[in-house]
Image 1 (cartoon, helix red, strand yellow):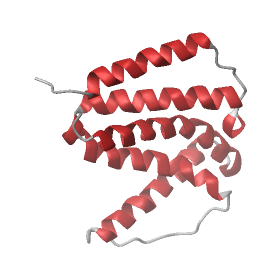
Image 2 (cartoon, rainbow, N blue to C red; image 1 turned 180 degrees about the vertical axis):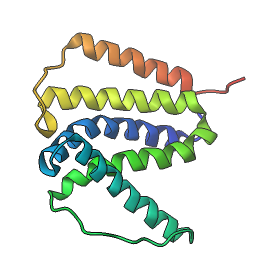
Image 3 (cartoon, one colour; image 1 turned 135 degrees about the horizontal axis):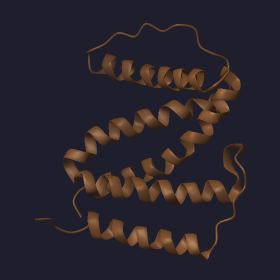
Image 4 (cartoon, rainbow, N blue to C red; image 1 turned 90 degrees about the vertical axis):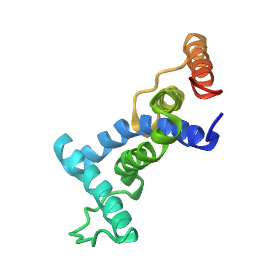
Length: 151
């Protein structure tokens, strides 16, 4: 497998992506609604991108007031920004299919876990053997897509 660590990072990014919806729901509770939640999430991502721009020498941040909310809710914006940056780095190196397969598999495993334990305040939905079997098939697909040479 070429760049196995990128496949693992894409897998981890997929796992974190499932957390974004429930976290954005909690942001909406604190910020006043879904549009406001999206604004907060993208503002957090914008801050990260501006910092990356400063480190790269391409941008200077101009920060406004920070909304008061629990720090863990910042993950709602950080997850999307991290996935965007990983996408830009990994896709040219491992290909779209391997990246997408890894992201989807990680996302599904995390989503099942979040449902099973009711993470982030979402409704508890127990995971059974059928879901686990389906996930194993997806993981087999990931191995088939991401491992070995491609023509």
